Amino acid sequence: MEAVIRDWLSQQGLTTNQIQFTIIGISLLAILFSAWVTRFIALKILLRIVVHFSHQPGIELVSPHVKRVFARLAYIAPVLVIWALVPKLFPPDHDIATFTSRSSEIVLVIIGLLVLNSLIAIVDERYKRHQHFKRYPITTLLQSAKLVVIIVAGLWTLTIVLGTSPLTLLAGMGAVSAVLILVFKDAILGFVAGIQLAANDMVRPGDWIEMPTCHANGDVIDVTLTTVKVRNFDNTISMVPSYQLISESFKNWRGMSDSGGRRIKRSIYIDVTSICFCSPEMIEKLSRVDHLKEYLKTKQDELEPYNREHGANVTQPINGRWMTNMGTFRAYLVAYLQNHPYISDCMTLMVRQLAPNEYGLPLEIYVFTNDTEWVHYEAIQSDIFDHIFSVIPEFGLRPFQRPSGSDLVEGLGNPAATGN
Image (cartoon, rainbow, N blue to C red; front, side):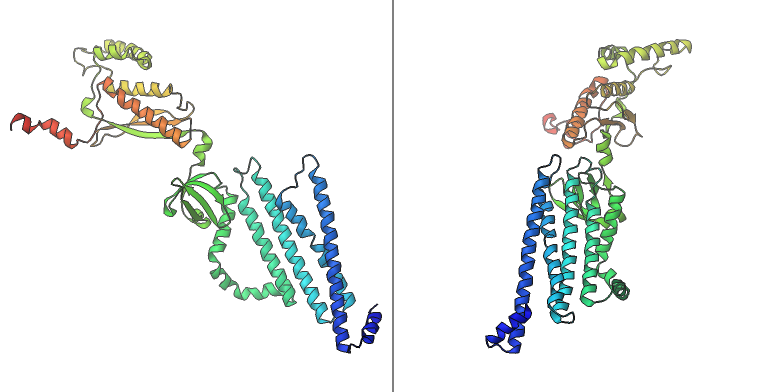
């Protein structure tokens, strides 16, 4: 065939060099046309496969990533055609044959890289739809896999360009490894930390984390190989390097959310001068309180026999055992919280006294709400303490409050009104 073309070109009056260039051009055009036809056929066949399986029950191949994989696979066929035809049309030592051979190998490596990246993207996309994604996120591991694929493809391409073996290239890179470590220190630290975060399940998308050193206090919206993206409660975004979550401390509130209970730990301060024994009138009044009926009856049945057995002089309250307004108030709070519809009955519930200080006697409420949503939690907590402050006077107690200017004026009297 080539001889016939040469004879025909010679009859047209072309020189030997012109004939040679024309033959090369015709050969290249033929190769490119064959490659284009091959890709067209391969793409048609692959698309038919996609359409066929898309209509099968339980199979979904409509994702853009899936279509991208088949589109990229279709490029393999023309590259293989070029790789196979060039040695048949050009001598092995010809510059075009050498260039085409190496270029084809590089293109195959690039296609393989793109296909693998698309497959990883498919895995990521499908896994995010799974109900266990938030519990076991694998985004960091998939990004690590992408990074490994890119490094391997880059080294393979470099060996093709240089015409050497991968082992020789790796041996030569040992000399510059120290420089690479210094240049890519943050990337390497982030890579290692990202793997540790994923392996130890330290942070997941949706977690509420608190890290004051990075001004992060909000919900995790993305966990990548090198950074953790946090949407703060003021709607700002904090980008926390992964290695800082490994090297520094931070608080993850996931345990609170998973437990189903959120803690209330708050104290009210009682003026110690208002604490006293309960008078019969106070006991009579408090016995009409639903949450105290059982407690008061049980306590009276316990104290009256005790005082009789020990011969206590009941004319003086200092003798024997008596109920106090503070103890009765604590019993009321315990009963009130036990019957509260939004307080968990399977977690710690405690009303305790702390050490007195200059502000009075701290009475701490230590309970867990059964609703962990922030807005609801704050509303429940506020309602509880609204009620507590409202009922304190019923027990003859006074909450402590630092005197203000108006308190001092009332205590000393109004000089203008008294004429002083």
